[in-house]
Length: 287
Image 1 (cartoon, rainbow, N blue to C red):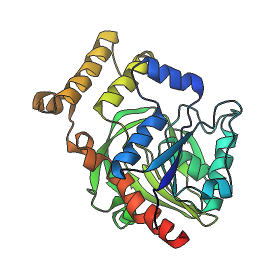
Image 2: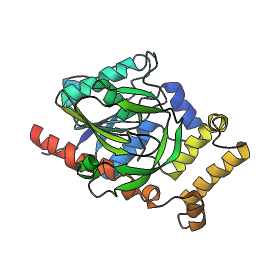
Image 3: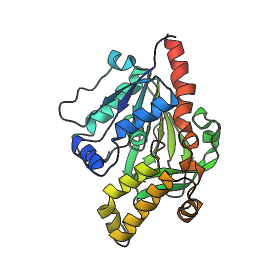
Image 4: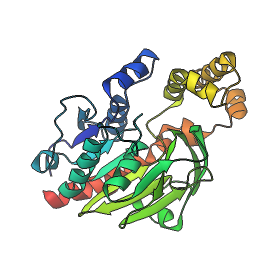
């Protein structure tokens, strides 16, 4: 079973949306995932695919099977709207299932996996869940699932979304939930393939959440998250300060933040479990 493991990172953002993130000081989603995977598995090789860009060639069959795992990022598109950039990504997710290459991802990833397998996503009637998702609780199935080996039964996590999974397809198992969003994690099996999807974002850290918030300030003000720009910028500055100086217990206390999000080993446990308990066994079987 020699050789480095290879991953395909699917960055669902279109070119304009990626440029907006970079302009606000945030990282592109694909690069965040590449860093997270390489930290979990030093030496791993990652190719980044941008399926929403014009002219993108989307792999299938043997082109996908050259990879040991496929990792999907979040995305600013909406899966249930009639958008020509969405359909090809659903087809790519179907091809991932058919290839039987283990897949994993955040936010958009969970939604794309569910829809590709026959489930449904809609706008969350509670609106946007933003910043930190509170009290995500593992279901009985989640507590026994390898995705959550070593994870606390209740935890907080970085999050940013307006859509939610409303109907799970056959072959899907609900793994985690909270009061705001019923499906916070799901394992989907379809056409012999397996996809572990999270609604939240283990790839974010305090700095990345600060920059994402900065990029979304106008939208968040309209939604009532901040009374004015001064309040929004103050929040961003608190996140940045705590990122730079984790000893600032006063800020952590004020924001209600603990090791669920500040400890990288705790925050990214799911991706390490995916690699150790799904990707590596799959590679061993194929080789």
